[in-house]
Structures are given as structure tokens and as C-alpha cells.
Length: 147
Image (spheres, helix red, strand yellow):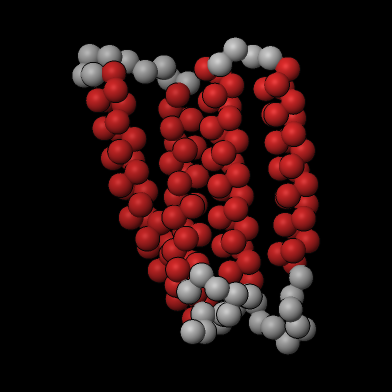
């Protein structure tokens, strides 16, 4: 598994974890607060810090000293993944505009504090799309794209 694949797997797992954490915060805001939510959020925070530390070590380790950081194929895969991500940004921004419009109506309003949350959600989904695009191009395996 080369550096690009490791980065894509890390980004995929981290983004999924952040989206889960995001959901927990939304649930914590809608349900009564209590000791259970506090313990859950502290546990998730600890796991996030632990995961980031382990990932920093895992992403740095090469399988062999002769392994190159990237080649022409890796660069082409990265360019295609960025193109897919760019297309998904526009689709998600259109959705982020239309969904609140249908949710609150034309004359309704949403709090301004929700706009950064919506943009952060769009960013997370775009990162998820980028990671999936990279992994699909490599064939999802740890075989460096070999069939």
C-alpha cells in the first residue's frame, strides 16, 4: 500500500469518525443532557486523539526504503479524484441551498450560526468523496491497484 492509499484510507476513516461525532453532537443537542452524553463525548474525544496519534505514525512508515512517495499513476489518480471532488462540491452546494429552502419555506429563515455547520458538513462529505474516488481508482485493495 503506497502513501496515497494510506492517506485515502486515513481520510476515509477519519471523515467517517468525524461525521459520526457530528451526529452525536446533533443528538446531544436534541436530547436532554446528562452524564451519559458527557461520558460519550469524552470517550469520543479520547479516541479521536489516540486515532490521530496512531495515524501520524502509520502514515509515516514506508514498507521498504526503496518505495517512492508517488509516481505518474499516483498523480493521475489524485487529479481525477480532485475533479470528482470538485463536481461533488457544486452538487452539494446546490443541495445545501435547496434543502433549507424546502425545510423552512421561501419566507422562513434559518439561524446564521447554522451556515458554518452546513459548510463544514459539505467539506466533510467532499473529503469522503475524494477518499472514495482515490480508493476506487486503486481498486479498494492493498495490492497497489493490481488485479
